[in-house]
Length: 383
Image 1 (cartoon, rainbow, N blue to C red):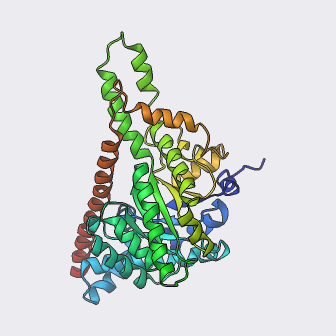
Image 2: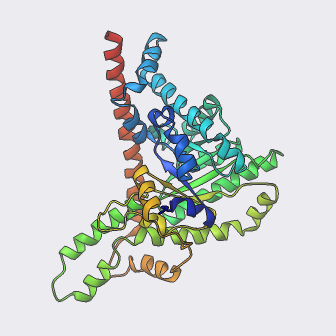
Image 3: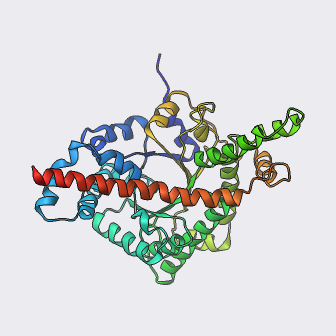
C-alpha cells in the first residue's frame, strides 16, 4: 500500500510549506536537498535559537572556527562567518525552487541580531550588510515587527531587500506590517525601480498565543466554584482556539489590503504580495492535535513554517483542506468574548507581553551562543 504524504497536498491549496530549522549537518548530508524533493519543502527559516542548537557542541563547525581564530577574527565575526556560510549554501540548494516559482518560494531567512530589535537605524544597517555579504537573491532578512522594526522594514524594502517580518502576534501589528511593506514598495516605484524581485512575508505567531491565553484561563478556572458551571464551560471553550481565530481574522485583513487601490497600483507594476506566514506552529499542549496549526490554516497565498517533527506528523496524518475562511463568525465571536466582563482577558496586553518575550527568546540564545562559541574559541586556540 502506498502511503500518502499529506504535506505535498497543501501546495494544491495555494500554501507553501517552509521548514523552521537549519544546520550544517542538514546541508552537508544531503538531507535538505532530499526534503525538498520528497517532502515538498519550499523554503527554510533560521533564528538565533536554531543556530545555537546547530553550532553549540557540534564538531562540524570546528574547522571553520579554527580558521577564524587563525585569521584573528572576533567571536561575533566567527559566528557570522559560520551562519552566513550555512545561509549561502542553503540558498544555493533552494535556488531551483526560487527560479521555478518565479521568486515566490525558495527563500532562506536569517535574522538580524536580536539585541537591536528596538533600534531602527542599526536594524537598517545590519539588514543591508547581511544582504550584501550573503549575496544571494533568495535570502530573506528577518526583522522583528516592533515599533522600531517597522520603519526599518519600510526602508529595507525600499532598498529592494527581501524581508521576513517576524514576531507578529496581534492583528493590528500585521496590518501595520503590511502597510510598511506597501510604503517601501511605493518608495521604489517613485524612483522608477523594479518591484518584481522584492519579496516579503509577515510571520504571524500561533502556539505561543494559546499557551499564554490558556494559562490565564486556567488561573480563572481554579478560582471558580462548582455553582459556576456556565462560566466554566465558556472558559473551557476558549482554550486552544484563540491563535487560530486570531490568524483567520488577520487573513481577512490581508484580503482587504490587497483589494485596496494602493496595492492595486503596485500589483499592476509587478509587485509580489506579502504573504502571511504561520509561525510557532508546533503544538505545545499534548492534549491538542499535533497538526492543528496546519490543518486549520491552509489557504491561498499563505506560508506555513514547520519544525521537522511537525512536518513528519503532517506528512503522516494532516487532514488537508482549505479552512482559512471557515467558521469566521465563530472566530470573531471568540475574540470578542475575551473582553467580556466574565472573561476579562486583555488580548492587547497578551500580545504586547508575547512580543517582549519573543525578543527575549531570541536574545538569550544569541548571547548564549556567543558565550559558548567564545569558550570553544578559547579551547581550540589553546589546543
